[in-house]
Image (cartoon, rainbow, N blue to C red; front, side):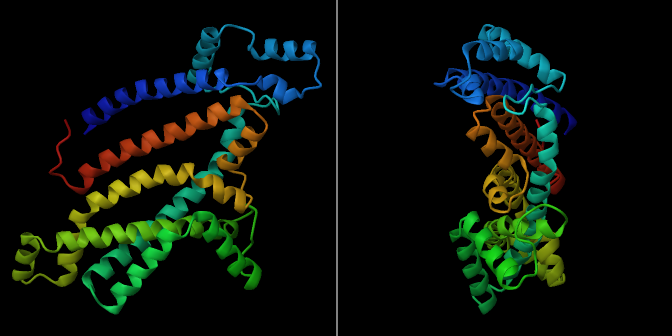
Length: 306
């Protein structure tokens, strides 16, 4: 597994490099001058030229790109065109809010979704199964912004149990995590149910029952363990999407995370901030995909890494 992980890391490096090349040159060939957009149309040519020289934007693109790579190696993502502060510092301040939302909502979705998926599978074609399928259908039908507004109206406005916006303490995390978690729960419930129904029809499950094993042992030790491969795949894929999709939740609940920082940077034409945020998003998704591949081996030791 260590050899496989090392090879995957070596493959990640050219992927990240290509992402950097694409983002760097794409943002610079787009119409419009970011410095002029940042300073405003009323800024004099001397002020614009001075800022370009200060930020190194008056040099050839390949020189700028090499300087950018050198900065990345040192952990320097440059300075914001608007605030003139360190981009790495602003991202570091926003990162915990986005990651806490993503991790909390995913933990909720995994435990509740797998539990409901197993229950609906073993209670197939009963009232419990029908209710679980209805819940999954509703969860898949609701967009995340609608779920967030609905929970905000119910628990913050009507019942006055939880704060509507902000990020002061753990109470402020509950509604955002539920908004994304409930939708992810619907996905995981649906996938777990279908995977369990496929597994429990297998011959080895019938053999386990014929040996007189308890039903809980058959379900959780044999059936669920083999169904976890497909569940892990969807969880790993949607973790990255969930992390990147936090933009809507952070705008609704006024959380100062990376999504809100990205929207603000786009509005202000702060291409340095936009570029660095997208690089961080891509890096997180790549790392999560690597961890997902490695978790396969922990779930099923028969998987051989080559």
